Length: 340
Ligand SMILES: [Zn+2]
Image 1 (tube, rainbow, N blue to C red):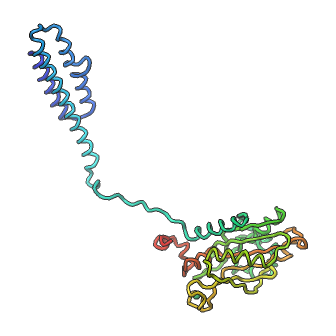
Image 2 (cartoon, rainbow, N blue to C red; image 1 turned 45 degrees about the vertical axis):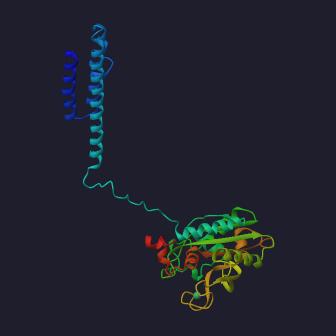
Image 3 (cartoon, rainbow, N blue to C red; image 1 turned 90 degrees about the horizontal axis):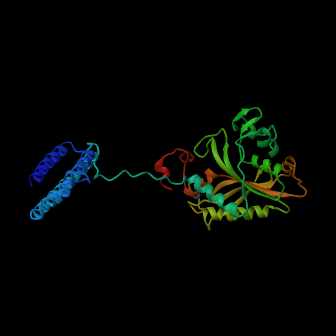
């Protein structure tokens, strides 16, 4: 019996020591030393055989009691260690785990991209393909092939960014028309979206803005089909009660040409500040492809006809959402962007 008492005393001292410098290793070592297969308490169990049968029940009971005590003590310091670790991980003065977390700001689709995606899905639904072209373009594709001769005012240094005499930042996405017509045979139905550049900047003009252009080339294409296509698009974009108006105009690459207006969505055509009291907002230009353009792109103008249209994505977005300044679209101001 004295050996049981001796081991118990020794164990209790060891537990106290471990308690003072708590670590999972020291707890494990203690466990192995006393309760492991070759541990001291297990050793006492094995020595039962050498005890006289009369003493055995008392001896056995005492060993069981010691083993339970050892298990409890080890569990106890194990809990203590775990508690200390939790305390340590949350006790930095700057950290208050009871505070709510920071909300991670989520993005939203930019209104320009929203309108662009809408245009893409609408026209691809009509069987148009999307063609992106180059933004740095030669004089030929940006001007000459589009029937804009060297003396044309659009070529003025005031209006165009020149890289050198023969290379410009494209002033419209129509350069794609020529590339597509040169490389593919009609029938063609494309839309060409992208950035275009003008040396111009005020409340409604930016030096870089986005355009989308449409081109259809086939046999028997007429202005009536152009009007029909744009009418369903305008209703899709601005709603069923919108009106579309064509005004005769001039563009070097179309003949006849027209400018397109939609009825002002703010005043419903009555006249307001946004539409300069006219009741109409201009959204872009259009027309039938000029035979000179066909000829320069190598398409037989006797056999094929076509129409083209172009509008500013920025302008459409401003009209659709009632945005008064074009600069807001690129200002990267979250207070503005969060409204969409
Ligand atoms: Zn108006």
